[in-house]
Length: 255
Image (cartoon, rainbow, N blue to C red; front, side, top):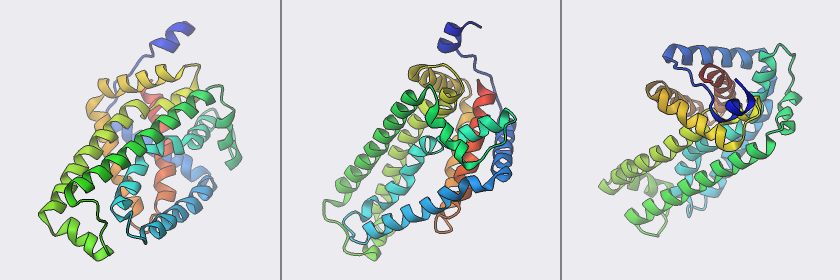
């Protein structure tokens, strides 16, 4: 396969659920080999969540707390860029350390990586805008006066159930978009000489050609992020790195 073909027409393999299990197993092995790699995440995520909680204390952005947290999965692929680099180096047989994660910043594709990160951030803020618009459309512009009132609105009123159903539906659309364009784009940019649009197109093709398997992958990501968020979000310090490493191995199986 010549360079031009490599850039424009990547070969997509057909994979199954067993391949997802193997990718997760290898991702966990990468995490276990150097658990110190997640020290940074271990401190960042709790701090971020505390800041969000403090902001929510004003109640004026209380309706956005859940979209803020749920929507963070939309930028997760960009946040894990250093983890892909660690898995790449470990796959090549190199000894790795925390500082090796910064190797992604020296990638020839760093411009494309930065642009894709900006695209995901734009999608994230679009999701927040959509979530706020849905809330205002159902409950009006007045913010709840307390956490109790907000919880009552959401869980004990017909309008609240409408909010959850409509919000979940819209959130699903955003999640599918991100899954399609970014499922393997970042690892692909790190791995080879491809441009941004080739990486995104290849990611979309991978999802289209493996619809059931990639749908299962999306559910695994969503479910594990929820589980990781339950113990005061500290579980994300394990869940996010494992998913990040596993994404590298998923890419290697697909392309």
